[in-house]
Image 1 (cartoon, rainbow, N blue to C red):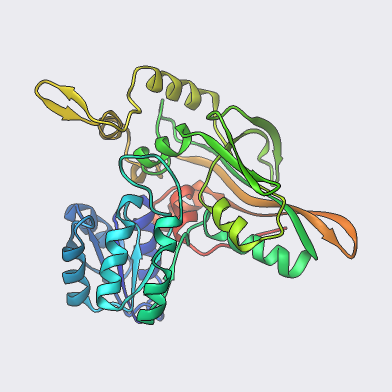
Image 2: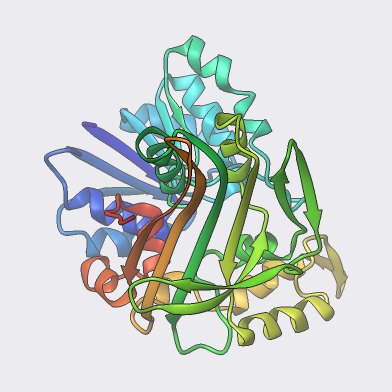
Length: 352
């Protein structure tokens, strides 16, 4: 890919820019743009080779179109917020440029995952002769690759897929999120949902849990059932699957802080009147919490993300766990970022 435009200068966007700058044989020209120009300039200074930067409001399709026309990239990598997926896709359609993102669209006024908005673009991208790769991070992203590999190489038939996401890391803060606080909290506080026997089943938030023993010295951790976007994609592309679920680990301290914040209304996404104006509590909370990009220097421990797949091979029951482990401190030494950002923005080795 000769020329690339990266939109978004958060923690994961920083990783993408720095890794692209380490691979100039692939990326001849790298341009990073964000609403906050100083974030781009900071990343620019930290890259091992030259990149260019500019300011753009990714909510404004016209601005994104002008930027694409100026930079003439072969590919736009959307590392902005999920709310901004559709405006950036519209800009790619208008300019005939390939598109890639790491998380699916969700409306700002409703905490709800669904690929339906982006899948509706399929025919327009096909007719324009350009590519749109959706959910190309880790989960979603690599977990889909794990599942496809299992189907093609390990199983004759897959019956269940459990995506299991563990962050066994500690950053030393009383309460912080490892990626965008607003998106993280919206994701966790919405109702859980999983697929079983042809239907979607909803659960109360974090109401189902179990103990899971993670490999490579991480050990037993409590995992909680959530709804996550790749479940929708897995069910679509593995039509014979019987069950698909997503699980994530949370520490007791994190859950206690989150419960208190919910109880006092700080996780609300609707406007609240305050001194003659309106504020959205979760946006104010985001401003108070540490920037995820600042957590790399103090975070220690590992992540483990993988797919527990069950099915049959040669007529016999079979189970396999395909996973990746990342060390927070190793990631920081490479790109000055913790492993959550790293796994979103970088290709991975894995085990089974």
